[in-house]
Length: 114
Image 1 (tube, one colour):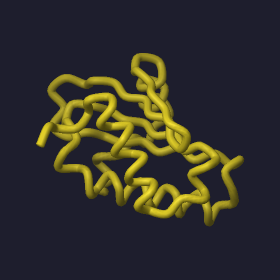
Image 2 (cartoon, one colour; image 1 turned 90 degrees about the horizontal axis):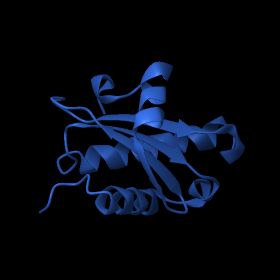
Image 3 (tube, helix red, strand yellow; image 1 turned 120 degrees about the vertical axis):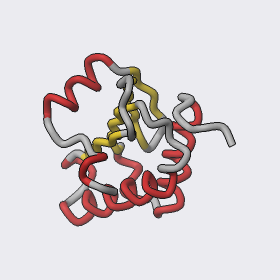
Image 4 (cartoon, rainbow, N blue to C red; image 1 turned 180 degrees about the vertical axis):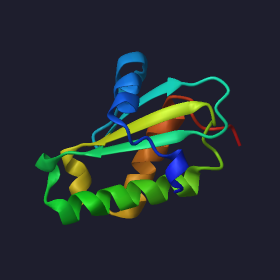
């Protein structure tokens, strides 16, 4: 995923947390807010230290970024999305993380209809 499509600054994360909506399942929590006239969606990832060591956290982030890249054609462009990984995520494989992310985005109407 290109860097221009990522949320990096703390102020941008806080804006999504303060003004956005939230939804969760057992593995992931999603915060999202609509940003009118934005050309492409932006994603911020958060994996806390309670989940595991740096290797585990980076593996989860890589899987989430790859899942977003594979779903990018279907995600609505005018949203900023922050994903927070929960503890059960450390035991999941890529396909399970992608399924969980797809479930969250679909439930909240952030995916284009096929």
